Image 1: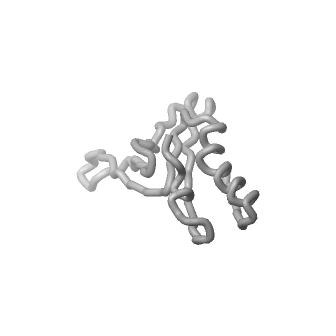
Image 2: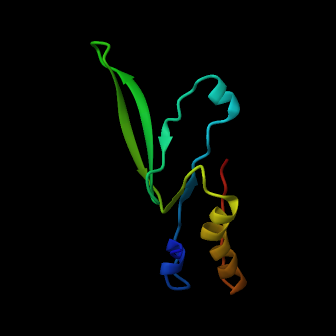
Length: 105
């Protein structure tokens, strides 16, 4: 597997890396028939599919693309997310540098 973007920089360089993880629909959302409107086609892109309706009542879907340093799909394990995001920062910290991880749920 490839090294995280953080490891491509020399030690001492400052860099903010934004990583996101898509969660699957909950059982309650699935039971209600809610659509899964987020896809993760690659390692750096999230697509949000927004259902719209035109003036003539024609329905269509807008696709909004958002790019991040790393994107994890709903099938990514906790171990994979940790090893590709937090683990390099822990190692960086143990080498005497400052590291911060912010998790927003």
